[in-house]
Image (cartoon, rainbow, N blue to C red; front, top):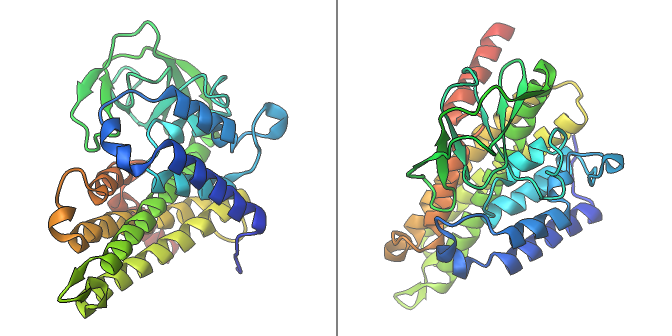
Length: 326
């Protein structure tokens, strides 16, 4: 399959990147730790059409589809956009108000009963919790339920709380809808991880070109070149796999979209974590400090690695499919 972005898709990426850079500059990232979702930024995301990417135009969405959604979410990941953007976008076809940004939706993939405690990102901000079971999609309104218990998050930009009892909720989708949501979530979380891996590569490259030692940029040293080359290869593989998976979900052909999504998530998770870790190494003494961008990239990568299946989960599933197919 020959794949290249067209002019409209490139413009879409650039537009989202400009808005994110303007509203969420990296030099203010420390001020966004452990704070509620900024509703002004959320409104900007809604105005861009982010939450309606998977909703048809005649239903109030932008109707751009899964492939363009992956391009957008790559930029959201690259800029560490806060808030439950992934779950609100996934929920938009089911939950009124999600497209316009008036309703914030959190979510979780869970095979336990609806009365089990559920750890939800941005729990104090969300109006609805979407629970994706193996055979159903269930929506739970948070109004009137007990406030979530806060947890110490992996990422200070992604607060987490535990709802002890959300009640029975409302059935919003069947087994097919649940399967589709899992696949979409896998692909779009992979896209966000691709954005992180690309940003980590950019940060490490820029530092290697600017930082001098013995009168020359450290990027001229062979050891640093090897690190950057490995980062570039990891990012390219993950990006290609994620674009291909998004294209297959949008237009299935001879491959299984769920398997393509699993491959993308596996590669993207590895690329994001490894590249962010390498960026910390390239930046040296500065890279290990709390406020530096590579630390934020790494922490967000750890969080997204847990979303819609870890690398180990997807590797096991893909391996089992290969054995079964043989």
